[in-house]
Length: 291
Image (cartoon, rainbow, N blue to C red; front, side):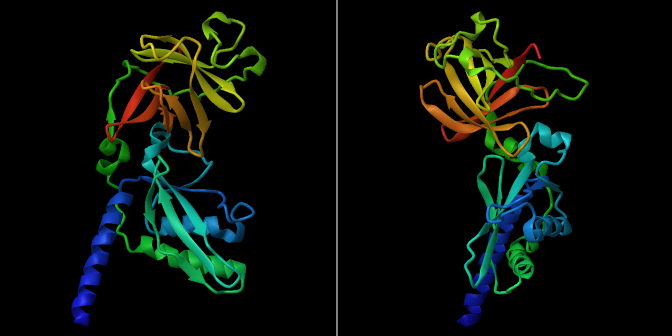
């Protein structure tokens, strides 16, 4: 009876690991933060460096957050999974758990909790982290672009016009607008030529301006063929994330509800906003006007 139970457990473990393996195979890169929330300073006790070392050793292409990112990652942030290390330590035991999330901040893999009772901080964090990383060691990682989150889980509903560029896209540089020049919900940006417009974007349904206010990008309607959106109305707020050109967004949809979602700029400089429709992620594409 014990042998049968052991066989079932081994089979269950194998299936679980295989499923997890498929998830991590979808990512070409792994981004390692410079610091974790439970640490007081960057790479304290070499925890971040050790994280990178362990992933590198297992064949993952790792990048420290804030370093220069490859061009394909700049064009599609969903190529990378981001690592975090959670601590539930107490005075007697160090407890660390490695967690990986996708570009939508959705957890895709959680390692076992690593525990250590070493008294020296350098030793105990290293010991606990290595014990948690055992979950990664049991995976046979092999990057598979067919599993890429964008190609598998999203449906592009609006295609941008053809854009031909031979040079690298310009960085999105947003000039600062004085708060006194903006009256939220009422401003008609098209009539205020003295204001500096950051960028203008459009698709077949709407055009709007992106302006920096209080370290956020704010979208104001310029023209729209939908009565839900009024000229000069604020319809979106964009907040930067740790990934390049990726923003957390509060976006007013056609039902007058606010979608809390994600947006990013592609290599052509166009803005793409993820929205959920009927249980699927669709991509709203806005072409940059006069880049």
